[in-house]
Image 1: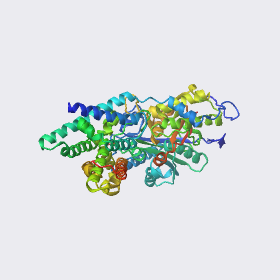
Image 2: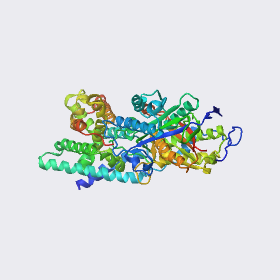
Image 3: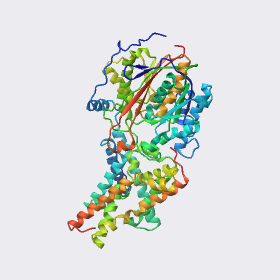
Image 4: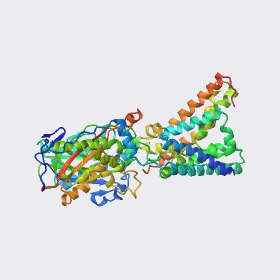
Length: 337
Length: 116
Length: 166
């Protein structure tokens, strides 16, 4: 049911019964490597193009999710997914392989929580017994589409972010063993005039803050009610801005652990990733791999994952437009709460 | 000595490009296009040829020399064959560079895959 | 599990983000990590300078080996530098060099060749005609267009004002 302005309260408490995460070599060299189902050693996964590699990541992550959920593929009623590529081709072709009714969504890097919220909604409302949410991204397909050819010698500024090569999928069910999705806040577009695609953290921070504040207002909760509030990919620049924006608005974010997936997935000091990770897969693999593990083993009891997306296109940037951003939040609790 | 000036002038033009990147916040495409136009204007003012005499490769290697070569070709042909020479002469000097870049890039694309 | 308040009328009424775009851009700029402009310029200077020194050495080599004049040696020199750049691009090394050198690797003609070669390699997946052929000038196109237009305007000015050519 609706809670407040923009929040869905899931009375029937849908359960995440299985997740799958697959990543590339750079993520495998990062601090969370052990939490992923599969780490590829080759960036191209031995495929003929970067796009085919990205598709394969998502196919494998979906297979892992279904296997870990302990169900058959044909038991999933709906697959909700999206990615960064034009016309969501990675998801269309994966959905073709899955052979499931498919809902394609575009949220850029916020797709993980957008699709998870929708999957939870389908299950909670009785429209599905099992629904799967998935997303993927690849460093090279993102560079090719949004920025420059991968071998081009351009110097990235310190505010730039590094698109995660990976895919994450989660199967949501009416009942079962696993972390529970209690509510989700759907964000609205926030655009405060940043137009530099090499500074997405600054562009997205206001959207994250807006969604988190709306979520807290809608649910009547405070940051202290969560063990962790984690944004998708604000990275070092955006994270710092978000902390200061919260301070300015009097939100006691310091009462919880406030972190960011883009800062968790890489070792910022050692790996050449400028400000940190980004991409649809960033929040997906960190949430479905690392955070799910910590929920299952009891280290975390209630978290809020706020995936952030920058909804620009290469054309909109060339035409001088600013970057409209969005953030979607999903609250996940440990199963026996 | 020739090498010293090649180093200093070539490095200097690159510093100009770096300032365009970092201070003016121009994209590489904007920066290179600006430098080419500056090279063209410099030749029109008669400054680029002396610079080449002085710095050798320090002036012929940076992308500014492409602008210089286009103007040089156009104006040489203007002198030889009249106004139509402005259009016919432009690529005479630069065709080696462009042709080489096209041919080598094409051949590379036949056998090499990007490494990411 | 501690109880959480589930009503909306209670605590936690945070006002919506109320910054203007202008205010926010200043706010964000203050929190942006500074670019190390001086260090970048030093690296660009050194790399650009070295590439030009290499060019000079190659030119001198052609002049003494093939007995060419400086003007005649210019074309093979440029072609050689372009070949080296294409080779480094294919080895996957040029982009790493560029992150360190910045304009030092982008401004010399080697940067021009890298822009064309990298585009050709990247778009091979879309085929030789539409992919490689259609995208090769993606980045280099602006340079050629602006150089040509500038040279044309300059030529036109010479014609209109009756200035003699070279």
